[in-house]
Figure 1 (cartoon, rainbow, N blue to C red):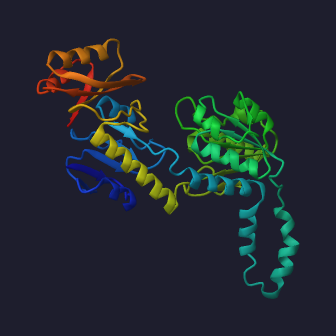
Figure 2: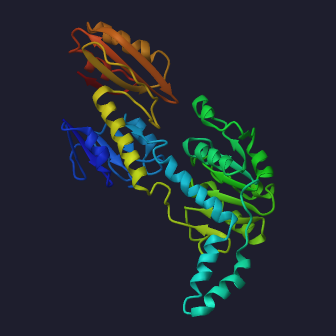
Figure 3: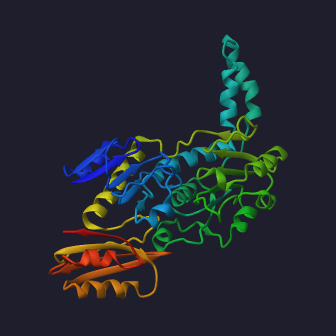
Length: 386
C-alpha cells in the first residue's frame, strides 16, 4: 500500500489511475508521495516517509527542489501537459498587444445608457483603438520548449515571420519546429529584429531580468512584449519606463504586480495559462503516472532534481539508489552488493549535476545488501522493490 498526500485539488482522472493500492487525500499521514499544484512547500517539514513529489504543472518554484535532492526526494513536473492551454492564451495576448481590444471594450462599456446614439458613437470613436495586423510582422520566441514551439508554429500559420532562440534546443524539439522558423543564434538578434517578443524560459539566476534596460534599448521602437512565463524574467521598473516613453507599445502578461497594474499600454491578467479543464486533466494524469511508475518500478521520468532513468524489470529484487555524483561510487555500490552474495542481473546508472541514480536488478539472497548499501558514505537513499 502507498500513501499519497494531495496539497491541492487534483483531477480525479489522474488520481484514479493510481489504483486500489493507494490511499489518497489531503490529510494522509506518512505519505510516500505528494501531489501538488500551486501550494507552497518551502515551509513544509518533509516527512521521513516521503519519496517523491509531483507538481501538476511545469514550474517548480513552489517546491524546495535542492533541499529535496539532499534528502533523496525525487521532484517531478509535467512538461507539455498544459502547453496547448498556455499557447492559446499567448496567441490571444499577441492579438491584444497589436489591436487595442481591451481598451475598446472598456470604452464601449461607457456608452451604456446612450440609447439609440450608441451606434453612431461607436463609429465615431473606434478610430482611437486602431492597431496593426500581425500578418507579415516579425515575432521573436525566446525559449523553444513545449510551449514556445507551439506558439512559434502557430504564429507561422498566422502569417508571421518567426525567429526562435533556445541554446538548449533538443533534437526532438527541433523536429517539431516549422521549417520556416528562423533560428536566432543570440537573443540580441531577436531584440533587434522583431516587432513582437514572447518569452518562454524558466526563471533562475541566469535568466532573471532577461528583459531589462539594456535589452530594451536595442529593441525596435514600438515593440510589443509578452510574458506568460514568470514575472522575474522582466525588470518591471525598466519595462514601465520603456512603456511610458513609447519604446514599448504594449506589454501583456499574466503575472500582475502592483507597480504595473492600471498603467496605460500594459495589460495584466490573472495567471490563467493552465486554467482549462483539459490542462488540469492532462497535468493530473501525467503527475499520477510519474508517481506510480517511480513508487512501483523505480523509474524516473520528468524529474527536475535527479536524472531520468527507465529500465525494464528483471531479476528478483530491484534496488533504487540515489547517491552523490562522485568518482567510483558506482563501482563501490556494485562491489558492495557482490560481497553480500547477491548477483547483479541488470543495472543502469545516470547522473545529473551533483546527483546520480542507479537501478540494479538482482537475483539471489539480498537480505544483507540493503543495510550494506545504506552504510556507504555517498549514498543518500536506498529503496528495495520486490
